[in-house]
Length: 328
Image (tube, rainbow, N blue to C red; front, side, top):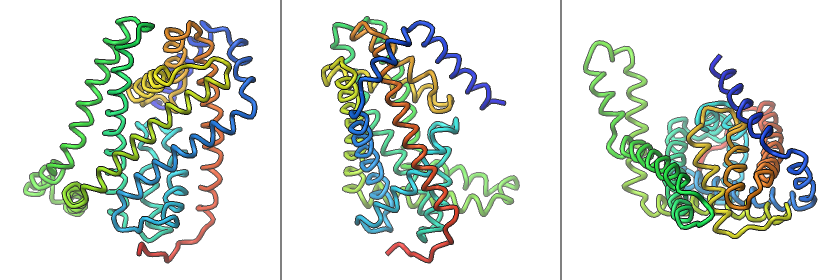
């Protein structure tokens, strides 16, 4: 019921956006993209590879070579399908990723789970850095009203706090401490096996943060590259739509869209949320909300292409027998 309610909310937001925008103008702009759409998809492919490299770095037990990058890419493609359609803050496909790594590539489930948590943390830290740059540009932009600055600042503060808590919970083994407290009491005895898994995962996280600091820094750097490529995607999209913007404005648009999607994570695929963010920010920067809807539509088409590709890979995994590959 909640999923249906969240989907209905997203569709309602989308309807509200479309009612207040010249849809025919937006569609006409989108039609101008033409062959440029292939270029947009190519840029997103680079974004995805950067994200896969980030995850590969967090998978300490596997080699940093093209073979394992390809494997990470395939698993990540399948997980992205679930992350997009399931209203679970972009983590709906994470357990599936760990299972695919274990079943087809011999990666221990706990190692896979730890790497997924690490990759998610790294991406959140990189996102905070990226959005901090977007906030600076938003404040400096004369085209945006003060209300944008206040809202962006408040949302940024909430994201920083959430990311800090998420990182601190891993770095200081808060889950293990809570598990130890529960394990010493009658209520925790039936959960002893699960608590042991939590403690083991926490130990893997600490070993990465303390023993692989260069990997951690490299992963954060790649995560930031991923977000910056998103700015380039917006910049190129606007060019092919016939309304070029500066890189600074492209950064503001992408940062605003990502900030809103993080805040309203429970709406499946960010339906209505993404369109509203693009329309609102583009209206303030360029005076054309239809341009924002057109840019969002290009991104939606790109997402559909990616989901179909990921679903096809998932189908191939479904018919594939369990592998005897080991991470060496």
